[in-house]
Amino acid sequence: MFITNTEEIHGKNITICKGVVSGSTVRAKHAGRDIMASIKNIFGGELAGYTELLSESRDEAMSRMKQQAKQMGANAIVNVRFSTSSVAAGAAEIYVYGTAVVVE
Image (cartoon, rainbow, N blue to C red):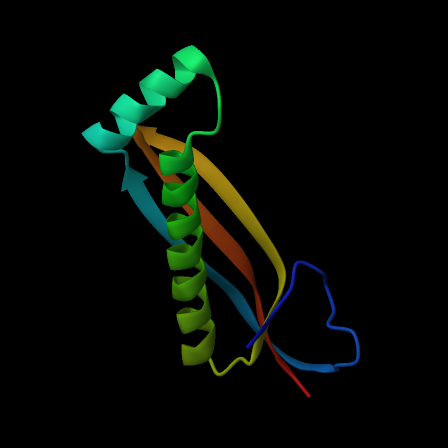
């Protein structure tokens, strides 16, 4: 499946627009990551545990969006965007959305 943040896919012709698709996941930090983040906040540096958590969350949200597009009969998703929001103390949502299309 082609996935892009542009409105078109170079060299491909969009023949059918299937509609908006999205995927999301809500993740919470756990005590181990929180302790390490507290230490890093004192000394500085990348919060690798959180970086990994966000990467896994993006992958899961993307997978859910692709699955929805496949169910609609699409073979590409254009104009993809990501959004992040705080849902509760220590929990965040990763939301991804785009337009499912058929290209040839």
